[in-house]
Structure formats: C-alpha cells, structure tokens
Length: 469
Ligand SMILES: Cc1cc2nc3c(=O)[nH]c(=O)nc-3n(C[C@H](O)[C@H](O)[C@H](O)COP(=O)(O)OP(=O)(O)OC[C@H]3O[C@@H](n4cnc5c(N)ncnc54)[C@H](O)[C@@H]3O)c2cc1C
Image (cartoon, rainbow, N blue to C red; front, side):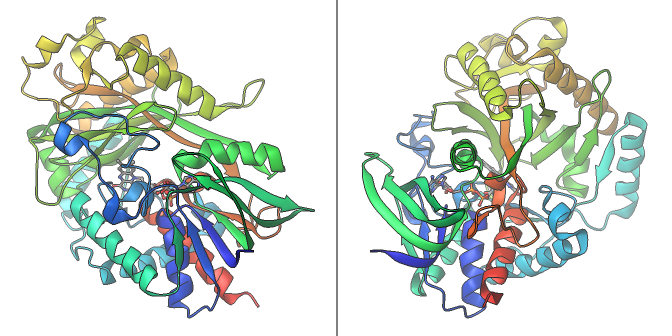
C-alpha cells in the first residue's frame, strides 16, 4: 500500500513551493506530488513549429505539467499584496507582504533577474496617476520582477531538478480523479492515467493538498459537491485581450512596465481592470480540456514584437437562483469560440463602435499587426453578453485618457479571455478546510490569481506543515 505524509495534487507554483518550503525547513515528511502533465523538460507547445494551435490531447502543454500555468507564462512576479488575489484577507496584509519578500528571494536564488520594474520614475508615475484620476480609474502601485517566458521555464526546471535530487517523489501523467474521505477526514486519493483515463488505484496520505490551478477549478467544484467541502461561489472574469502598437503604450511600459488600473464604469459599475500587460509581447492561445480556446498573452525577455497586449477583465458574481460562475464563463467562451470556428476571435475597436464585424483583409490596413496569426477576424460583440461588453467598451474609452491612442479604431480586441477562479474554499489561516487533513491552495482554491500569490500560499502551507507536531 502506497502511503505518504503529504500528497500534493498539481505541480503548479502553489504545489511546488509547498514541497520546496518543507525541504528548506528540513522537514522529514514523505512527500508525493501527483501531476496530470509531464516533467517541465518534456513540455512542448507544437505551435512553435506549426504556427497554429493544434488543441493537444489529452491536455494543453501551456497550462499542464511541472510548474503548471507558470511554465510558459510571462513570468511577471507581482511584488505587492494588493495584486494576485484575496489571500491577504485570510493571512493579513503584513504577513502577505513579508511572505512575498521571502518567496521573491527564493526566485532570485533560482536565477530570477535582479531588476525590478515599476519603481522610481516618481514624476512620470504622478502624471499617469493624475490622468487615471481624471478618467475615474485607480492606479495600483505594484513593483514587478519580470522573469520572461524563456527564463521562467529555466527557473522552474532548476526547481524541478532540485526537488527531484532531494527526496520529493513525483508522479507525472497521473490524474487525481477522486478524493478518499471517511468520517470527515481525508485518507488519500484515487488516481488514473492522464491519457487512457484507466484507474490506477489509491494512494494514501495523512494530508492531501489540492493545488490544481484554474484548470482544476471545475473538478474541485465537483469534489466540493460530492464530499461536502465547504465553499462559496466565487467570481468569474469575462474579458478580452487588447493589442496596440508599442508606440501607444511607450510611456506606461517604460515607467510602470504594467499599468494596473481598476474602474467601475457606468451604467453597471462592475469592477473592471487591466491585467497582465506584455510590452513587446505576443498574444497566445491556451486550450482547456473541454476544448475551449481561451486567449492570453506573454512576453519574452529578449525576443520582442512591435506590440503591447494586456487583458481587460470584467468581474461578475451570481447568487440566486443561479450561482455557477464557471458555467457562465464556459457558455460565453463556447459562444465566442463558435463564432470563431473554434479559434480565437479578433475585432478592431473601431468596428465595434461602428456596429460591424471585422474582415480578415481589414486587419492588414492597420499599423498594428496581430501577434496571434491564427486568430479569426469577426464579431465578438455577438457573443459576449451586453453587460460585460459594455463594461469593456467603456473601460477602453477611459483608458484613452491615461494612454492616448488606446481607444483608436485599429486597436485589436481578442476574445474570449475568461478567468475561471470561481469557487472559494472556506479555510482558516492555516488553510484547514472542514475536512480534516485536506487543504486547498493557489488558483483552484479561489484565493489566488497569479504566480507570486500562488507561490506564497505554497510557502505558507509548507511552513504550517513543517511546524506541526
Ligand atoms: C499564458 C499564461 C500567462 C500567465 N502569465 C502570468 C504572469 O505573467 N504573472 C502571473 O502572476 N500569473 C500569470 N499567469 C497565471 C499563473 O500562471 C497562475 O496564477 C499560477 O500558475 C497558479 O498557480 P497554481 O499552483 O495555483 O496552479 P497552476 O499553475 O495552474 O498548476 C496546477 C497544476 O495542477 C495540475 N492538475 C490539475 N488538475 C489535476 C488533477 N486532477 N490531478 C493532477 N494534477 C492536476 C495541472 O496540470 C497543473 O500543472 C499566467 C497564466 C497563463 C496561462
């Protein structure tokens, strides 16, 4: 019978930083990480050669495998407790700030760039903030350490090898399909082969830590219902990826690297924010298991495009009679995908205001050339519901005050960009759920939405376990 002290489900940043902190604290716990995807050195997105997304089966290599969604991410570490999710609401702002500093040092030890973006330039930042106030937007101060997509890969490879060289066992291409819970206590997990889905038995553990990321949010929702794990319905972010020429964003790129702006546009006053800005970056596609094509963006440390992309996301909550934010987000994504024949849709902002679709040949008339070449020109307004669409349009117009030219006719809007954070697992400050021995971390827990905060949650989990008698 296989038995471990700690079973970590998912090798994303939150899972691997749990193991890392246990090792750093000389814990003698027997640790197992179970990961649906491959080792990081075997992860490869075929799009690099084929130029189009081939919807890899059984999973997308961009989001699945060692280091999770972090491997091919832009690797922007947000060094502020105000960014990256609601974890500070559980552990407090000061604790979160202290842990960000500690976790950042670990990234530096594994080779992260020592440069921090978004600090200094006080006069220019004041000017940007003045314009944000004029536009009714709040500018969040957030220093950023930019790993870059290729360097993020290298850093996480070092982390993987470090953990393997020590005593952390890892099972790749294995899927946790169910939790074993008896009389309110977790006993272990039931695993299956990721490809064949054939059951491969039960692994027992005193502690099970679920760190399955955004992609695992739906599975975790099912587990919550089946095993009565206490949770509340969370938020779903519906949005688009905006792409403009670097010249438009030059000032904010140079001064802030990433402009984190929040607004509550009329008439709905939902929270709308800019997110994940990639100067000289590339728009990308990620595929969810159920075949949904979702847009994202990233940037390399060295290879640069002529464009900057960023997400604009509108947050939505539901209560009753409907409280299924993941389902809502999926339906919106399905509709946008349907109009794009399974591909990401792209539309010019001017066409949206003119009430017409964009035609492929019209994309060639602009200064901005799409960095996602297989995106299909069309009409995202026919698929994104009125409320989020109006929020996005009004936010883009407000951004124009801060960044002149942002709301120009040729600005590209790609869809769908949906963030499935959803269910928030009810937990105390030691990440205890109502099931003894069961903890939830990172994006799947609903409490984080970024690399740094997910890593911080993992570090804290490692500390808590190492201090237990
Ligand atoms: C393209 C892209 C760019 C991004 N850029 C940035 C950025 O610049 N800065 C930033 O802060 N954030 C960024 N993010 C978000 C960031 O990557 C995530 O917030 C972070 O990785 C969350 O960490 P996590 O540990 O919670 O989950 P994840 O990193 O999602 O890892 C979860 C892991 O669990 C595995 N898993 C899922 N279900 C199961 C199961 N049932 N059994 C076994 N294994 C399972 C998955 O395969 C995955 O490897 C980006 C995301 C993407 C997709």
